[in-house]
Image 1 (cartoon, rainbow, N blue to C red):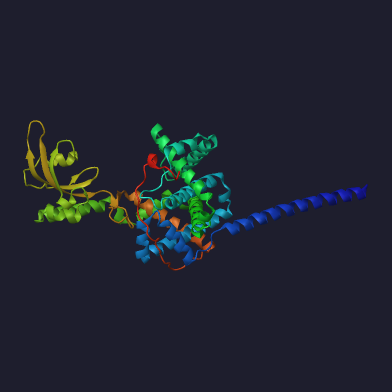
Image 2: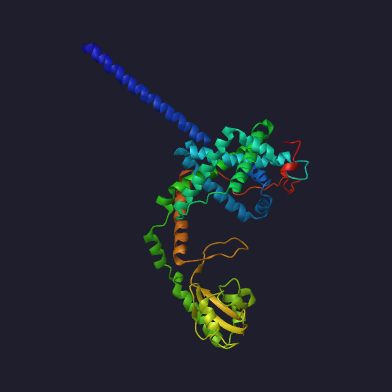
Length: 428
């Protein structure tokens, strides 16, 4: 009896050990597959292929990259960061999520369809387009329609989660019937072309295709990981915002009022609004024309400005700062037209806003927006926390990239207009 007991215990222990070994072996195999799938390095040749492929759809942007080493350096920095974040995400199982797979497949479909469209457009004077009848036929298949709905639901969910984390709780508007139809046809055309691409063995063998798919995957994984980490690791806390504002008195609205007072003093000492406005006014609508507003109807602009303009003589400047919800105005009346039907007035002004120009680099040719001190604090603190968070991930996940790379543009590339879908015939 004792022998039997010992045997049974031995069998049980062996089973447990065997099961644990099998689990360990599966875990190790999965870990090895994960490591193999992580994008760790790109050579100069790889980058040249990636960028050359991207030029088919983003020619002007790639031309700028070719001519500007600083842009290439920034490109490499951003690439290194999201490759490292993607590696971390893969290790934590993000690539196994259904949400990632759906989003990834959609983004890859878009990429393949764009690339294959260029191939099919060779020799044509317009870009190849899938006919609407073929797109509708594709959607008539129930499986395809279900995939469309699943894809759109996933994309809306991702967008909603991102907005909620950033404090934008307004629900996404429901598309109209015409918008939904347009979306379905667009998705269908993308799927038809991407399937054509996948069935073209020679096309799929192009090394640039595989490289760009890996980069697309890294971008999605990086975005997913950052979104999930936002609240805990990146989102500014109230105490951090308070500490930032306490340490940056330059963002106190009183500094703007003091600036307006100094400008008013200059004008009282003989300076002219029309000369100062282009240099100091924060009213972008009127600054370049010397702060001038002509023939303004009553009730259209700031009530405080209107009241001041009607309280002084033509040619005079209101003696005090005029405060509105937007800021502090310095106003000179040019003239008034007292007509029965539509009395108007013309004036010049300098406006100093209560808000501040957003710090950091802006988009060339687009003025930076004016934002509140709290918005500035949130922007700066969030930027600093994100940089520190990403820097730590990059340190844990070394990525090999060259210091620079050559940008080679495709030969004989030209921007073609879209074909009318109803005109596309034989190639569909």
